Image 1 (tube, rainbow, N blue to C red):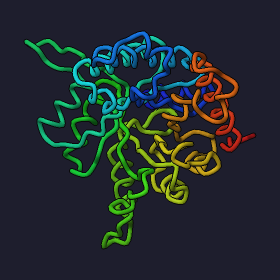
Image 2 (image 1 turned 180 degrees about the horizontal axis):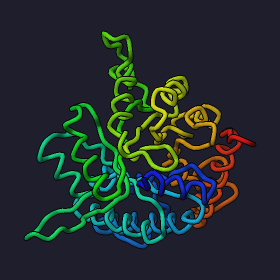
Image 3 (image 1 turned 90 degrees about the horizontal axis):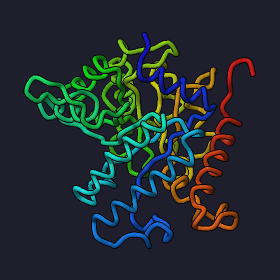
Length: 312
């Protein structure tokens, strides 16, 4: 069956690029050439961020297949920030980029259903179904078990959407919980990976991957490699590349013999490429989009040089 993951993999193949740009903006990241156009009120800051986002999308939409928008960096600017979140979502879709809302929701019952309605499904008003954010994928926390994931699975089936469930994260303290051993001898992250593989069994598409997939960090390559074997039908959203220390040669362990199986996120590395030691001497602040585009191409080429494809 065709599914949301098929759409993502097809886009990755079209652009030959298994990366996603993370849109996690803070006001201090915005170049002065944009900041100076607006005042420092919440309205002005949010408008500056929206312009920054749109210009980065314009610079990368023909190179990068997807955008991951972390809702926290919009909530922190209040209602106007949430308007910027919504406008950024709409703009990315207009530019034919797949859209991942990084919301990390994890609740049960009617609350989980309400979250899913907002991002994947529909909100019912007077017997009419209304799409709200209408993204392609969301990120979820599985800590409350199947009850917290089931409403999202139902909407993934009904509306052809997808979800990435947190399995093994890239942060230094992730092992405090995720690496604990259970009575069975398996780690918590392995147990969660098995759950994700089972949750997604009815949503496997033509490429062999389910629309119910996993977040697996780039900073723990051994676990990444092991989880590829544990969950062969589970696609990976891989954070931690670049600024957090994840290396391309390690990330490649999360891909299968056909060179698919994951999409690698870079947020600061792409958004703030114009500030990096590598690009700051080549591009001025006013050329920040060019620096981001150049870094996107460099990242793509580096990853592809390590990802082994059958027959190559």
